[in-house]
Length: 126
Length: 110
Image (cartoon, rainbow over all chains, first blue to last red; front, side):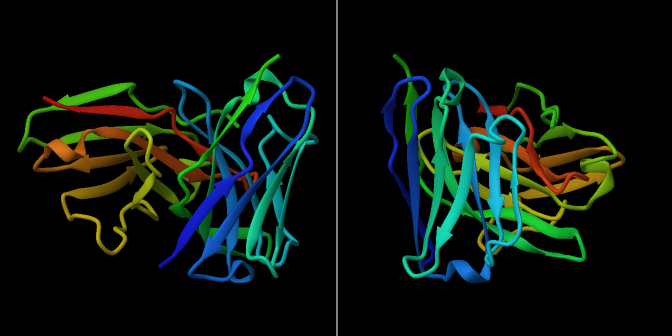
């Protein structure tokens, strides 16, 4: 059964750093794209980043570009999100999700998030 | 990367049908047939309900259907049931190779 479990959330001060992890079971990361999505309290879903199975294709939302870094460890079948220079507006539940679809020749096709993890809460506050 | 536009809330009685719209631009919804819809019960993991505008994943009830016209996609739920009460989000691939969600719609089953 395909399952994703996030961890690493917690309380951090503005300007601080945190690394989130997403452990996968039931499939191998290297064959898929993976993504991070977040939901601030009382707000909607916001796409954060995605990474290809090879690690060669990475995209970020403008709101986190230059501060967040996505990566994965094939040996541990785990996805990571390194978050630096955290701001109050980064407070959210962070979900990891497998991103079905593929990219070829500079374009991507059929992207959809399935499945999702249960999420981990990140709170940025002094 | 502006969010797609969804109505904040919709409601319907059991057995009725409702439609949730998702308005974008020619750079996202209108430019690609890669619109997907997610059901989110608070505190749980979001669930994929529709992908590639109108395709249903295995296991999703055929009461859920999707369509698109121009820059606007739609999710229709027929035969409303109490368990359909949830938040619904659309998502689209964009011309910047990024992804974007709608603001979300809260469905209330009266």
